[in-house]
Image (cartoon, rainbow, N blue to C red; front, side):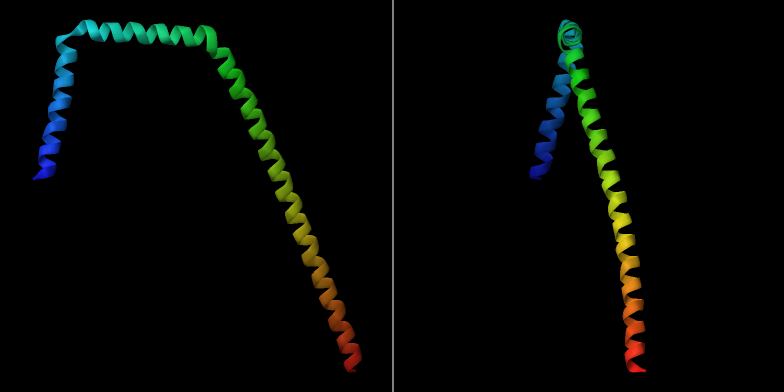
Length: 102
């Protein structure tokens, strides 16, 4: 119905685009040349800056991950210590309770 017309229009637009590329190879060649020039410009002027930025960002992320892992380990150790202290206090409280009840 309505969607069929929309899909037909999309299919026609895609076919027209593909046929225009096939019928006009100079456009394809020009696009390939422009892409190569763009890649060369990026490599010449920006690639070192981009890779340096990415390396710095990776170092910051790795440092944050290491710090988070250390904090997690510390939190687990504190939790274990708290659990042991709680168990010791509970045992001591029970012992005092037993002593008072006797």
